[in-house]
Image (tube, rainbow, N blue to C red; front, side):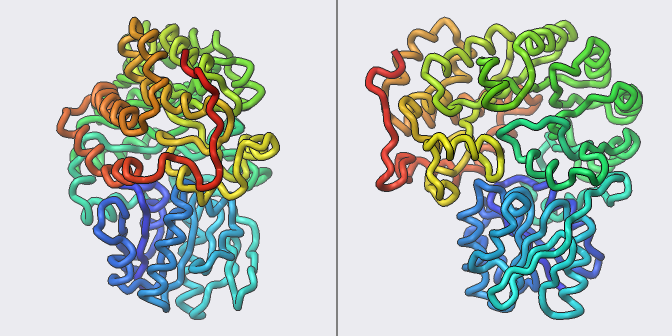
Length: 493
């Protein structure tokens, strides 16, 4: 049996690596990355796979459907299975042309069972965790079960990517995950979907043992080389006992600088000290918005400004850098509020600001509230504006286009706060290309600075994403045809 994984963005997906690792060795598998292939669909079809596996993120939805239909046209016998975040939130996507089945939730156990049944019976079976399409009808399998013991899973199959794309293998900064799940219920996050799916089925937040994490890092260091790490966990640490054991092992066996994310309410002087002792160089937490009221009422992120300021002080006292994340363009945000996001991060003493435009994800509370408010088109998933969290908003309310420009200059404003009055005048200029160029160059600068890597390594990361940048610059100005977005006169003064 042959499996082709097809994705859009040029980095290893942990879900894909986990699924590949779960497959028996006799199953041939290859990954095809849209941004790194001349024609990903044609390349995948030429592989003649029995199954085309699509790890669908919502931002890739329209692109994935196009690729599925193209592969089907070139290789009609292939069974197309969608999975990952979007498919879990919207399993009804199985009704789309070109999709034969949807894997809901974590597929480490269910996907190999599905493939075994397909090999035996020749057609998709509605096993637990799967929705399938039969003769035009949707058949829903049983509820999926979470993987409670992460140490019981095989190590992620990085070689799937590294043997095909040497540029990914040769990166000196590599990413790891020590856990699955998040303890919070933020209105904008896909964890709302997963936590509902697994409610009553055991712990949603699960963590690998420190020994397992260290073994994985040591193996990657030996096989592929690395000079620094980034942990992609939503919250890297909440268990002090786990961190103490990790610190002891990491310092002794790895000894490389790393980046991780924390949550301010649970951040203590002891955790800050242990992170520093273990080698952490930069700590991230999500600010999302400077407005504490909106953070609570709109985003359901129950972290106070004072808790953030206290966490920032602890990080700085230990000599670590602080990276914060902010989402511009909350429903009915004003330009003044957008600039207040920058000012609050200056108060925090943030060294790096990772700024995004808020995009809704399906089945989340923020999507529902935006629909009810009438600022979100029902078919936003297919909108040409729904491309990336660093590009356009799909909300429609007065001032949003100016706020998009504030987001593009936010990192530069953090580096040169004395120029804030100038930036307030600059965002009046309606030039998509100018502000995107500012954003890309300042993000390249930020990325290189916040990760201990060279300019050449940082440039390679951005070069791999050039297709997305060029599509954005050559495409429409971010409006759906026939759906103008209101812009108040005088915004940005």
